[in-house]
Length: 282
Image 1 (cartoon, rainbow, N blue to C red):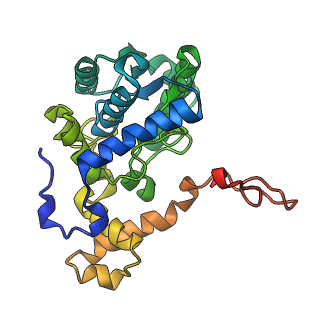
Image 2: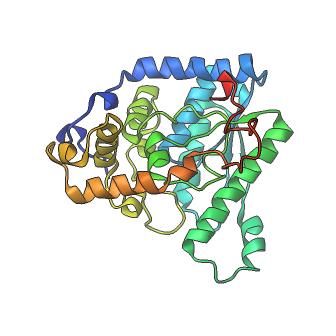
């Protein structure tokens, strides 16, 4: 499956991107955030075999040097073998450090106590287990976990809270999925990764777009118009389906809490995150 023909979707200005410039900026961002601000010259990235983690690994390797980047593959017993193969393509292309840690025993050790857990719960357990592994490996290696979540997934709430969005530094967080694809092509990510349907790889034949009920191309364009302040009728007039607009808006409105730090019960005028915010805390 190839990417959708983006030219067929009305493209708001925020979706147009100078991929080469964005790459240079993000590499500078990573050097500044890790080395200059935190004094941590090494990065660790969970490699899923997907385009987001691949782009993140490429950016980290270019910014910090391949010898300072670890790509961690964390398969579960039901993971598609091609996910491991695609992640290895990134490792081989970049010559970064790597480790493969099977999370099956850890996940199943808990699920033995919860045999009735449905697919959603099981997926969340896998995602949180992977983040546990990354943070523990970061302590062992002296490397900072770098996030891989994109703006589309974050706005739609399509991620596991306290898992995918946990790392303190995220170079892709302000990039829509279609923009991540543009960066992938600019960086030379293998086309087998760029062109395959995005999937969380939680079950056979599962894809992101089937879960979401909308293509990334349409979701990105609708989201971009919404962020510009367009109401539903104005977006509808640009050729989108009302159902898609309603779906996107409901997901954005219903997942705000996932994009916010824990809500603090205020008992004073110095409550952290509510009143006590230095400029660097924003």
